[in-house]
Image 1 (cartoon, rainbow, N blue to C red):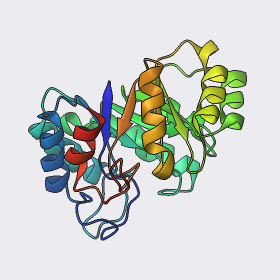
Image 2 (tube, rainbow, N blue to C red; image 1 turned 30 degrees about the horizontal axis):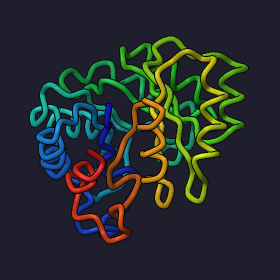
Image 3 (cartoon, helix red, strand yellow; image 1 turned 45 degrees about the vertical axis):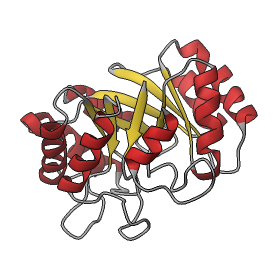
Image 4 (cartoon, helix red, strand yellow; image 1 turned 180 degrees about the vertical axis):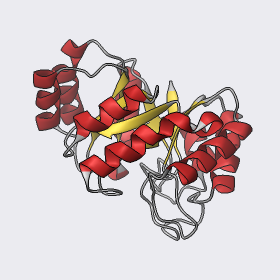
Length: 232
């Protein structure tokens, strides 16, 4: 699987084509779907472009994107930098259960963040799949100690900027005993090398303006569809 990560935490104006509004996200998703993408990860925003976990904004973004790509799976974030209070964050996520057509199919939960187990439980209670974000060796060891929460659909292994395929291999070795599908991806200067490494290992991966603003040759990417086309 090649997942498209459409916007992430990129601020409006960080790139001319970063999609912010639900309509922009939907247009990008439709363009990527034409290239065969069936899984999307997005960060819903409010009317001024700030990331949110509140139900109405999440529902609007997801439902508008879903209308554009009805056969794709759509995921969102639960990142702690959006709502630092772990109790409040879990409350908001639990409220997604009633979002109907605006309910995400899955959501990422970063294992290194405070309250991650509570957020994972809230997703499970809401009937939403869990994508466990593992950013480093310490988080992988935490996951091995605690175990994989019920409702987990995959582990998202993220190689940080400046890290290499060797760092990816070490992370994969630690995560292998969990027995869950792994989506391996990089960020910024590690995005393209790690994508190629994931393909060589037969793993799911992802690409999009969340992970990199540049094409393989270092020039600016045109948009998300351009990055997907290069990855394909």
